[in-house]
Image (tube, rainbow, N blue to C red; front, side, top):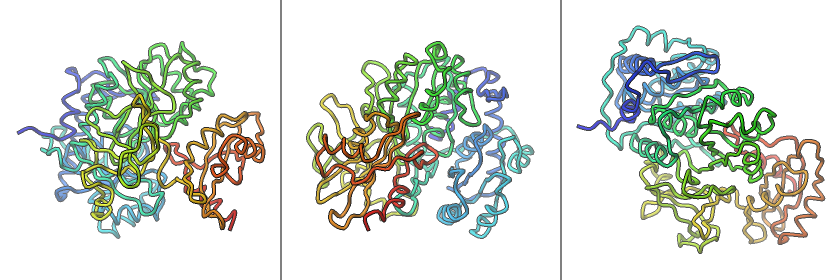
Length: 506
């Protein structure tokens, strides 16, 4: 009987010599493949010793560490369901997630044990462990007494492997249920599509409570038997120092902007690099071009979601990587752009993005009505993203459907306006949101960050737009600020901006 447990596939890709280095930390600590094998076995044995029910959820809110990754592998290995939680979440949010997911085990940092354990025990969780980023905590203390031999739990492709809660910017956060088959199919497709090869080394500096760092990064390296250079946090100087030892780097756009601010970033530093990948938020075309000029490398931008892992990618080889686009649908993924009635839109026109494929999730945890609502009759997932496909087949994401501004009956797509503003002198970045208006129902408001040393004027920016854009598209006001609110993956939190400016025209 074939075992479809994702861990079994990752483990089978480990090199023959388990004493080779699998992970090197920023502080110089080395972990071998044997360490990953034995460590995950010991934690898996600990979890199985607790007498947990089938499909038990293991909720984890800890700082980034190799041991936290080992806990993830152990959860897969033991056949349980991994539930990563953003380290920024506070008590009200944790109370909701634990109440909703009803995890059998909660793992948190020692510093948070007091309040997290109180919430967990109250919700009926019987096992609460601690895990810190300095290789300490009750989880490791208990696991140290367990055997380092473990038979991988047998799982089918449809069995649940993880629940990822969406960011919850439009109401209650939803738990996306991802199966072993969802995650394995995506890892295998990306291995081929991005040309992973023997000897590749990944610099891993992303959070591991999110698709990008947890699935794309970790699965990518492990399923290729590739070493990771593991940085406890993103430090641009440290990344540049490590680039000559690596071949692959994955980052959110903010990380690329911060790397470009370092004088040490040049072609020599990137001489051994094969691939730079960006995602989780839109990459400005200007950042894309500046990176090409400074490093000689073209960033590969891709697109995915918590519910689907990766959906599209610019080509690794055999095609042009185009700035401002997310490339083509990955092999096995069917992507279409439709109008509100579900009919295909003409080439180059904006519509709703729907997808289908082996990577698409099974539904939302304990939300059957919401799940039914998000899938079409023919099985396509409504992503909630708005975009277009050009004549060459390149996909461009224009924004979220919830960000659409309907002003005086006209549809206004914020990404189009932001693109115009970002090209104006002195502007580093912009965000456009819709706020209530007594006459038009809704109007746009632009929020702009200035380039270093520049002082763009909000009134002047509005005047420039009026000269070049249809009047209904022009934001009624423009504010210049020092920074935009962002989540941990660098995405601008437009819900925060909408809340901030909602009373402007009341």
